[in-house]
Image 1 (spheres, one colour):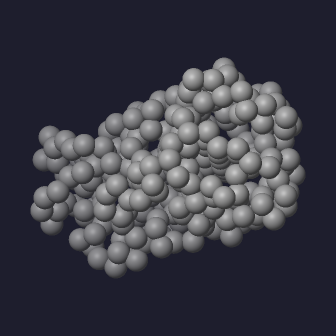
Image 2: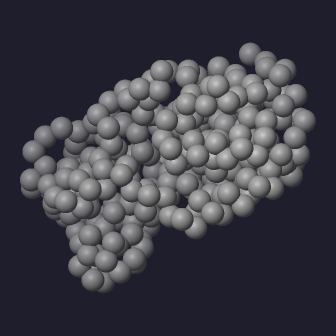
Length: 267
C-alpha cells in the first residue's frame, strides 16, 4: 500500500530525527513485546533489580538467552532498516535513535545511530567494565553447559527464548578478569539510560526539523521523552506503527501499516 502523505512528510524535511522501536525488526524474525493496544503480550522482561538480586534469576536469564541467541544473533536487516539507511545516504537523517538492541540498523548501513537501550551483541562486567563479544560468551556458555545445547524453544523479544524448566544446574561464568557479574550491555527494565546517551540524542534533536517514529508504541518513557521534546520545540511529528502509540494526540501524521511496506518508497 502506498502512503502519499508519508512520502510528502519525508520529502518535506531535510533533517529528520528518526526514532525506531520493535516494530522495525519484527519482519527480521525478532518478536515484539506489545500488542496493537500497547499492552504486554507476555510476562514483563526481567528487571535489573531481579537480575542483580538473585543468582537463580541470572541462571534463568542466561539459559534462555543461550537458546534465543542462536537465531537472534543471525537475524538480518529487512526493508525497513534498508529504507532508513537509504534516507541517511541521501543526507536527510539527522539521527536514527533506536530503542532496539539488535544492531540491525547498523547492519543495513546506517551510521548516524544511537542505541538508546544499548546492544545485545556485547557482554559487560558490572565489576570492572570489561567487555566481550556476545558470540564469544555464547561459546563459553556452551562449553560449561553442553547438555543445554540440545534444547530449543520459541523466540521471545530481545534474544530471549520461551524456555521453562529447572535452571538450577545451569552454570553462569563470572568475569575472568575480576570475578564480577556479567550482563548484556543493554539497559534492563528498571535501569536508567546513561545520561550522556540522552544528552547526545537531545543535541541531535535540536538540529532536526521533524520527528519520524517507526515501529514504536512509545510506551516506555525513555523513548517517549524525545517525542515530548519535539513537541515542545514545535516540530512536526509523524508515526508509522501498527496500533496505538502513547503519542497519538501529538502526531501530525499517522500511518498504520508495517514499517517495511510504509517505507518501501525510499527503496
